[in-house]
Image (cartoon, rainbow, N blue to C red; front, side, top):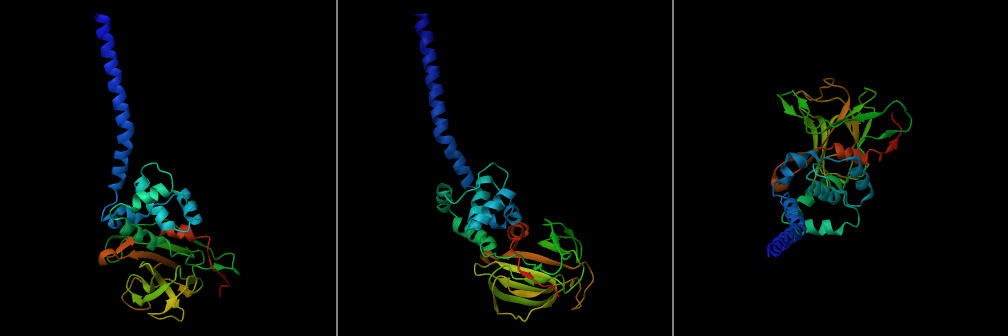
Length: 282
């Protein structure tokens, strides 16, 4: 009698364990999926995570091979919680991930922002010299580094530094097709150009030395000459130069719901760094 009761208790115990395992197998992936979907909020494009645009070498390699880098990276950021969780980078055939996110609330606006930053980019913004071995450029991820002119603030861009500190030497080209929206002097940016792409991103080229024959309202193509790298700015007096070394400040801005949001251009520049227009430097 006692053995029968003991056997019955064991059977019940194992049955309960079986049910728990079955429940976990069915529901834990579903709960994980729901947790990932909850990352897609209406204000995600204004978050520090999205604005920082984190990309690994593996993600950049996949983005370079993909015809839609914005969507690919957008899915990867959601799957990995912007790189904090382990997640595979979706490839061309990653239909399941794409369909899951495409059906989520807020996807269209989020994906549009990702595509606006990445999908129109064709060239690195500084030409490569065919006649100067010394005229290299360098850049680092300086997103939100401290700046003190006109008060303490974070650096909303990437500085592409000139190995030869000579204004008017390095040609600057458009990274994208687009329309010239702004041209002229800004206290912080000096001589600058702002070009809006078809998808609505605003590419900002600052501290120029001089301009190409270009005016507000003109259409430009990716790779078109915009002007020369310089050291203008940090003054209310138009034409001021020499307050810092020659470089190009590159910024990227979006305007979801009419609100300006800057995003980190560093990953985009890394994405395009091997696609440079070659020309003779003057």
